[in-house]
Image (cartoon, rainbow over all chains, first blue to last red; front, side):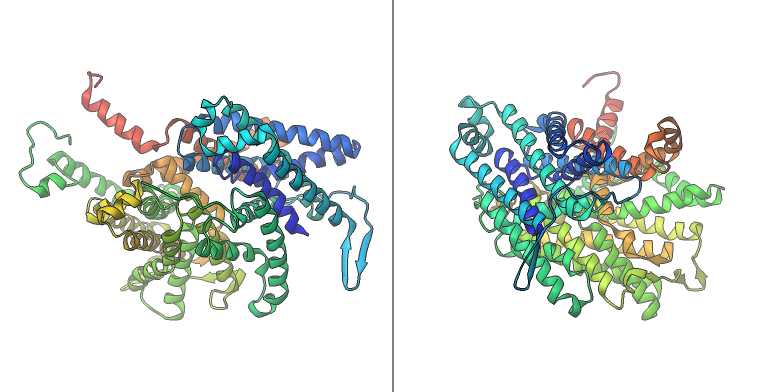
Length: 283
Length: 349
């Protein structure tokens, strides 16, 4: 079930790529911050669930907007690689702030706010919170896909991804699209962060889960939302399978490297991802 | 091409020379004498610092070659350095090879391992290659953690190097080896980039399709770039292992790889002196934060007791952001501007 959470992070990254042609390394940190803020409001100040969720989303959107305004907007005309390096710099800064706040790797546990019944049919036991996360994720995915396909703003975003200057020529404000897309993806990362921290607690390895989200996005294709969904589920299954079958053979630790082995494999076989559009390069 | 007054080039060798005037020779010899006499002053802390810097300079020189000159971004230098360190430890402890042989051998081993990254660079470019090298890093570290011969999570114990009858087991004595190797590697890098291979690398960086059309065999040159840069990383790893006398998987974390790429960008992506500038600048920043973190912890008591690691990360990221926004060509470019304005003084251009 963690596969679907990877898909959420991957969806945020795909969202940014669809609108701005920049694949962002920084979202792992945004998800950590989302989890952290939710903890501050829910456990630290004891606000009710829905209020802390709303405030966390607002703060996540604010973080996304600030990042976009300060770091990404000055790089609009530059090659996409410079923007990627900028997201890498943002990753480093946010990592530092996160470590500062976390004071050396303490694990702050959540109290469960989702009901904790357990389904079990035949051999498989599934906790209810996982089912709820799964259904929320699927709902978000379908909303996003519909947003991109059917609304005018979604069409504007896809146009901006193709060519900034042509989109500006048709009257779409590229700056506003960027701000909107960063805010939206930050909110999605916050949701994913809250869901993951629900399972594992706030821990300093949370940003590396963000890196796995990027890998899932690459595996499914950087500009395809259904690809991100499928790839996330595949990665979840693959991790658990490799932990189950390969660990006794090799001696442990297969769960972490399964993602990286998978991404290397897909790079050699189909570099643009399972469902990604192949970019044809011309001189 | 700028020359001082009165000097003109009569041959191709003179035109391509690194050192063109007598004053350059004097400066070179004076600085070499200064560098080699540093351990005889009583500045122990700085000798250790210069050791660390020199090893990082070798790594970033390799990174310059593959990323700055050839355009293939590689986040895997820490992993290749780990391969070199472990290989050198195994060669000297388990196989009993002398240090002077195990140094180039571990470089070769790391270079051959780096051909995996080279193979990736044949298929994918740019940011995809960056993620592929991150994946190679994690896979390499997992391999090192799980193989029996590399000692698993406890690491290995390396012997101090012995050349003839001398054993180099202190900072000052290792200083001579490390700085000599660094100067040699810098010399090799400088000569590499002004040769045919270097020109091929630059062509591949600028537009590899056009280079291929022109006749540059990009497959071979990309593989060669990765081999050379991983050779550098392997040599640096070997020196690291013998300097610290212990190798441990945690010394080669992904954050080190990110630091090396950051040093590359801050120093200047396409120039050999950029490696020196980047390493010295970033490490200087690190030391600054280290000195000032107790003061900051006193001034802002909510930060916690040991903010040094986190603050150095924040400072590094902020400096990287500022450089990406305002000076993407790095400190080396500013140095060139400084030199030009010094030459042209009092004129503006």
